[in-house]
Length: 202
Image (cartoon, rainbow, N blue to C red; front, side):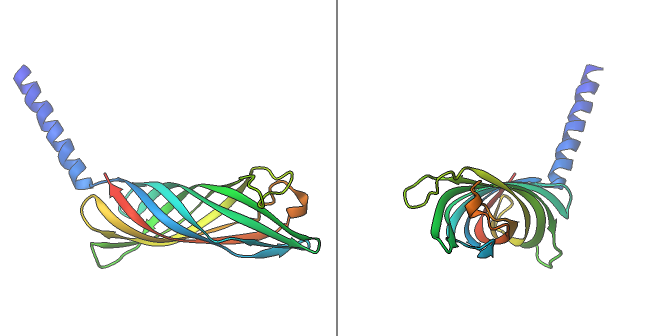
């Protein structure tokens, strides 16, 4: 009886391992370097520009099915918002933290190595003033903005566990004003973020 139970348990374990192997890797971690390029905007007598900057991004993606995945990402960069009014120019340098979630749809493509996809989701951009001299306005405080996210990309499979990734992400959100009324444009802007990086699947 005991021997039969052991054999049955072993058989079940083998079946489970086989099923898992057939499903393949469902989880992946990505590390990407990106550029951050924000459109100028204007409103309420103000013109706002943002310095271009480099960015670091890490992410986790879970494959729900062959065609759909869920993803979460964190990104960081530092830039300077410049506000121009008739009274002069104001600058606020800030660290920008981005926390986002999105749904990824794999696109059909006749290649087992190249895997294109599209994504859409949302999240939050947190603007935290650095307080550095020459890039600070009295009263400026940390501020969060909700953002709509969309993008496209492609993975090039190197091995079962590693891929190269090229991606474009776009963010749409309201201009930050850091809680200072004189910096409020009451306008929306767009940030483009092309990137490249590596992916590890497990």
